[in-house]
Image (tube, rainbow, N blue to C red):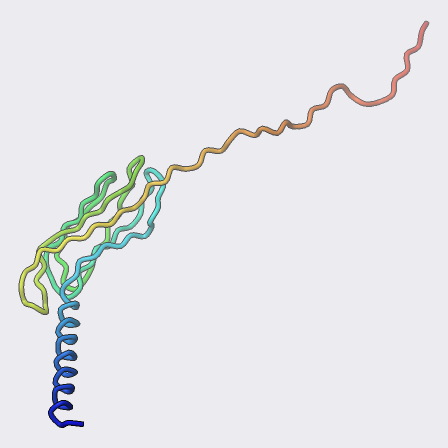
Length: 147
């Protein structure tokens, strides 16, 4: 094999590996995420929401639509939790946002995340259509005597 051709192949492999390494570093940038203790709830049910920041630090606010709850706190590679109570129907939407200083790029970045929890109506119990047993009269033998 030609030595020049082999050098070109090695150069291409090393360049590709370097680019992949840079892409991996970029994917470790600061992230804002939301998790919930339940994905489906009943109307008025309370569940726990956890908001997390990884790879950075900053003030984050969480708000709730079609329910109650929310919180604002400073997160530094950490998380906070709060209780959320669902509304009467539809779904609960939790939105978190804030400016986070990214540890990798050393720049402030606006971050946001959204999570939806479905509100499921309880099933109505249908009235029983099967009839119960009924009895009439009593049992026994009787004799009538005529005077």
